[in-house]
Length: 313
Image (cartoon, rainbow, N blue to C red; front, side, top):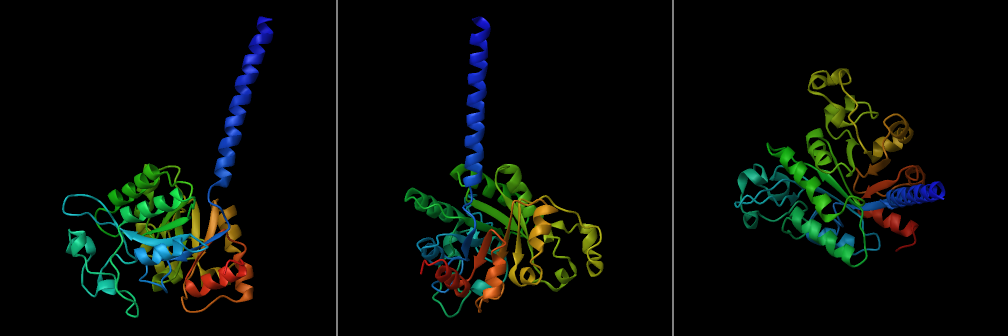
């Protein structure tokens, strides 16, 4: 009887452990409701890119997923609040020289975002405000997928990266917020602070030098040594560990087999595509190719096509 009772207890423990494992796996598979598409910098046809108005408009749409760019900002009291801004430098959005955090230490003194002269200027949104906005949407039963493009280039980049990871973890956003960057120092500290967070790189050629880099590599694969040999294909580059990869759309359309390469050779969990040409929609052939990827970041012309195809608009 004692042996039988012992076996029953062990069997019960085993069943409990298996049940927990199944629940965990089920939760992991439910995370990131892919395939999906996000508004690139919010609904930038409605309000200034990355502004609270543009992002709120996107989050209130029938497709409440967003992509936005963020940089560091610390106020005069030493409080890190971050900014939603595509550029580390102020010139394009404000007309002023220098970097935001070098020029100002009071958030209230930052001039408004006027990146698009055809739209009214809007205040820059803080990263803290962004997380609170996402929290509000979740309280209403809406869980948006959020793609953070980390654009910090200052001396406190690693502290900013860690802070973002800690924020994602503190808010419990690990299963629907992920972060990518051109730079390894923007994502590595984040991953260290939040190991369960997903971080990724980008395949793009918006800089002439990167046209020498194979699309089988990301900019985060570039080492200090390989920068000197960019014209030879960046000799000495190393495969940086990544959870996902985002590919510039025109590069993807020329090389759709990159999906298999990044998944099979680089072992990424998912592949995404981000819009480069903001003014035109995609062809039927291009939409067909996009079915190969899990995530796409779209400007209004492509997003309206996407919503029509999904029967949501």
